[in-house]
Length: 355
Image (cartoon, rainbow, N blue to C red):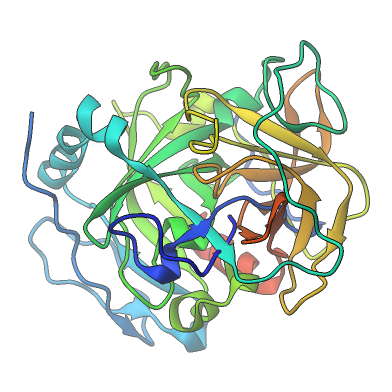
């Protein structure tokens, strides 16, 4: 996602007013467990931080302490009982979904030499290695493992993107930190993932999050270098999400070198969020003060949290996730940035994949 420190996203706070786009630096591959009306707003329990890990709660049981900064993980129980889950599913009416704002993150100033961007480019019939945000029409696994996210934060409804990753529990997603928690502010609630979303169709169902995880550097400092996180989902109709979508491997620790592909559901600036779009090309290090990498891309808010993949096969839609769409600089709409998935990201993943 792209962080712009400009408050223009309605009810979303300034720290969340970030244009989410982004690419992340490369990584050492750590592949684990492959598998292929109006209702009142549901209030998720408040976050608690402590030194002990929390176990899953039975309905009505008291909140358990969350993992604290010393553990490298800040965690929030989301929805853990059937009644609360049903309330979240009912919350997302067609009207609320249509009105949801795209989440995004923008940073103040662009690095030297950055150029202003334009709107979305025309769709292309075949995948290309230098896409600036065309609609993805080539099919493949990426159209199932990537999905649209709906969430409530700071009193407003927003959209992001996320991806299913290889995990023992078959329930784990990677996304941007600002799609989970408003930096040092509130946690998201009503967090719902729709894999394979296309033009309002939901062929693979809806999944409500049961756990949200971010790094301490994001939770306590809103550090854009750590704008990543994990969501662990409840099952839907007795099925784990990966049983229906498959999953993509995720890698940690390797710097980007080759062409990367980034995917998401941009929802502003000429994009409408109805279809999956992509960017592709070489990455380069951020020239300012983050550890992120940049890629030429005109995708806008709403694509935040979408996956960056290396070794991406355009014929099969398979690759290895090495970052997520994170932020853009306010005066450079042509470049999106993604955080480096290093040791801190792996800690989140190791916790999430076995929950």
